[in-house]
Image 1 (cartoon, rainbow, N blue to C red):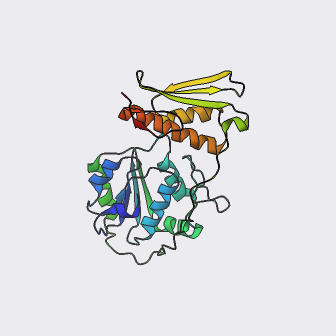
Image 2: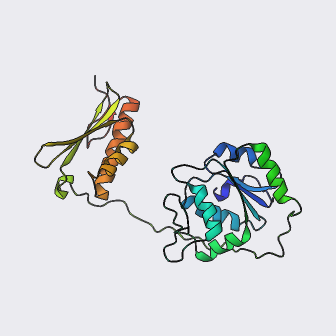
Image 3: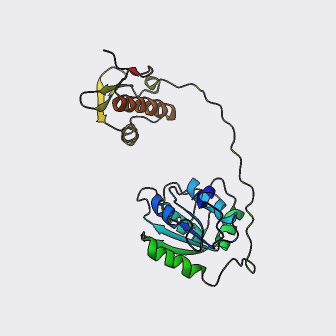
Length: 263
């Protein structure tokens, strides 16, 4: 639910977070009582954006969480845990969160505290029908209007700036780590990427076939055949090139730029 997702100036007291349902956010944005509406995909950067968006709008007093949560990232569960329990000052982890990597690195504890003071949670996870949700928004907004006095205001604070990084570095060869080496090819006839892993003495070790670079890289990581970040980055880039070649009908050759298929 990034700050810019609320659309035209809305002053309603209810922020609506539709979790992984983007279309639901589009349907509810601009409804009576809604001051902010948008999806939430991750339990870290996404929740940080929710915090900033809410505390920059002091008229918002309620947070309605609805829609289907991602079964993988569980951002909604982490957002609900944050409002209930807060964030650990020691490691910046959302207390009691079950989502994927629920760490808030770019918000200060004071901002989290201000966010929790500012909003009351309406937990309607799993509800995706616009009609009942609009009625719930009106029920939350009823009698509240635009009045924001009498409650502790929240200062948006200062966002942390990104540190500038320069591309480049040195990649160690996979064989230097004792893990052997990888040969990647694109089987155009089968429409599959083929990864062959060899021991340093050239004995075959593993083979993997698939159509998606991401799932194949995750499978290699899960199997423990790569443990160096630089090796994972190299394989991820080559697998993505091979997937692109299959999709666009290009020739793929490991460590070389993609090119049009030869006659």
